[in-house]
Amino acid sequence: MNPILNSKVLGKGRPICILHGFLGMSDNWKTLGAAYANKGFNVHLIDQRNHGKSFHSEDFNYDFLANDLKIYLDALNITKTSIIGHSMGGKTAMQFACNFPEMTEKLLVADIAPKFYPPHHHEIIDALRSVNLAIISSRTEADVVLKKQLSNIGIRQFLLKNLYWTKEKNLAFRFNLPVLSKKMEEVGENIRSTDNFTGPTLFLRGSKSEYVTENDIDDIQKHFSNGTLDTVSNAGHWLHAENPKEFLEKSLAFLS
Image (cartoon, rainbow, N blue to C red; front, side):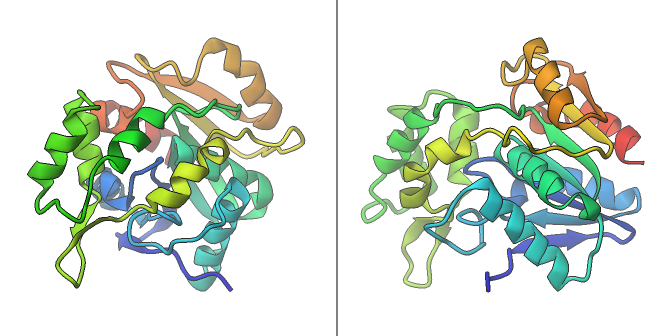
């Protein structure tokens, strides 16, 4: 039996599960999570396996990730939920909806399409591997090392949120870097050709992002016949963080 995923639960009402992206964690969504809770939802901010405070495992693909969510929901006696997933979390959400349509009320996929993406996180993985945690004693020191390969301060801050102090008073990353480094091909994997979900689905993309294009609409319709595509203005791939106000408005209009 799988261990249960770590989560933070906010509010009461209709359940929503929120799934973070690659190298992220539930904490990335706490502000929006609180906003959904204030609108009458029971919000589950979830750490996926090998991320945040959830368990580490050598097994890592979207069927495993989707099944983890089913085990989590079964443990809480939640028979149906809406799901918001960003990037890698969006792929998990899509796979869950296809595998367990009877448990999926509404599906919101943030800035990812149901297609294969070639591995493109090598620069980030290489930068993280260059951080020698045996000799690093602060986030500031880790940032100095990351900065040599990653000039974008936003990406560095996003990654550094994963640093924490162990019981032995050493710094460590919450994500399972060795496994995720090996499984980058799995992170980009597409939805299987026969997979489909006919329930209400919204794909939200960032206006400045290249992850979801007009060319992906046919693919979206093939797998999600009740799916629509909308755009969040003035936002790139991290659309929920770059334009949270518009993301919240559009997501609430769909979920409500």
